[in-house]
Image (tube, rainbow, N blue to C red; front, side):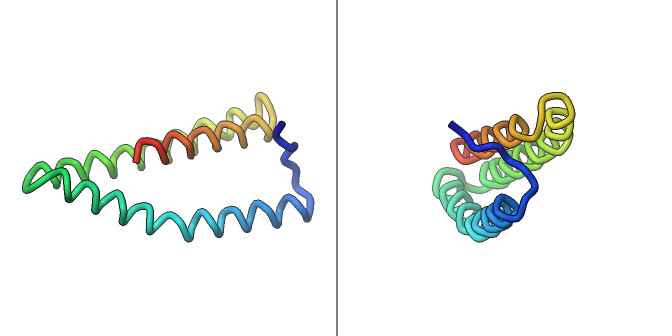
Amino acid sequence: MLASVSFNCGNYLLMVLSKLIFGLGFEPMNMAKNIILAGWFFGGELSFANNISLALSRWVSFINGVVTPRITTEFGITEAFIFGSFLCLISAFSS
């Protein structure tokens, strides 16, 4: 069962630390993705694959920025947290 997300000192510190850990892991994950793409594609295909990968990641970030505030106002912050976690899982598996 997921714990309720609220704005108190304990959960806020956990959220900041989670963001820090996610930020530290983003660049190595991005570099690994680019290395895998470079091994699979060559020439113009590599450029196209990199652009598709970048476009999808930007599209998911945009969707998250639009949908998450609406989920928060309609259902609550816990459901928005679950939705954000789901998007992170989708992003990790698609990479």
